Amino acid sequence: MPSHVSNSSGLQRLIAQLAPLLIVCAVVFALPVLLNNDFLLNKVARYLVLGILTVSLGLSWGFGGILNLGQAMSFGLGSYAMAMALKLKTVPVHTGASGLPDFMVWNNVQHLPWFWEPFRSLTFAIAAGLIVPALVAAALGWFMFRGRVTGVYVSIITLATMVVINLVIIDQQSYTGGFNGITDLAQLEIFGVAFDAYGRATYYLVASCVLLSLLVAFAFTRTKAGLIVQAIRDHESRVRYFGYDVALYQIFVFALSAAIAGLAGMLYTVVMEFASPTFLGVQLSLSVVVWCAVGGRQSLVGAFLGAVLVAGMQGALSESAAFLETWTLVMGALFVLVVLFLPKGLAGLAQVVLRWIVQRRHAAAGGVAQGVGQTEGST
Image (tube, rainbow, N blue to C red; front, side):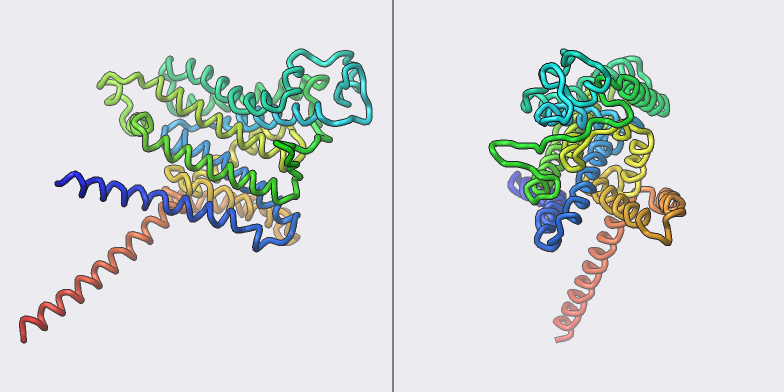
């Protein structure tokens, strides 16, 4: 086959794979035109952030085969990194030495702890929100994957690690705010632009991060490293036989997934205007797994849409008087039905429907061509 033909077909496949991603992002950017309501815009922004979090899990679970039940750990670490920086920019009602955050004053802390000092810089906080979750994931991954821990044991270890960090944050109330978290934050301000939680600037910041996260994750899956990660997911022993350092690739995708989750956590603090231990909770972490499974864990766009749709449905049901007490049963039933009848999620269903439509069109075109051929033969 000529090289220009193969290049053309490769470009067509790339465009076909990118098209759903770009269409979804275009819709996300166009939503403020349709939603002329600041409260609804803030609610949609929250769901978009949860979509980024689910994309991060889809990258490690769907493409890397690593089911991380502690994905909310990275999310929470990013959230607290941003909250610490914004807290130090407030003028608290109660101030102590060196302008202490109010909850430290209430707990008789005399000086700002050393690990809070660097967060006076917003640049450091943003870098920490990405790097710290990635480093924690890399360290945890080094112990797991170098020790060839696989399957359900990875899930248990990640879940247990998240619970431990959650308990530490709650226990160290003097330095973290404890159960109350970190509240009364200043607005994020970058290059003179203030990001009000209910403003369009914040929404477009979230939308831009949605596009960035999807593109980064998509680009990684098409690199050589991304293809090796997918091969490890399918046949780990075979990849190891060919001489690849399997643990290194697993650690990398695990850390990359954590960094994207950390980005989502920072955005969630901006949108919600606080950080809470619930952001590192078991309930959120398991919810992300459900969203990813419903959307389709081997599809980045499917995982994103699964989070937005299911979280939106969950919010609507929980606010409805008719489903106030039963919305958790409804969501559980939905998950069971999807697992039983749609093992590849909504993305898998969309692929089946699209394949059926294409086959019908080809069959119809073939029928027309055959009819024209018979007509020409008879003449």
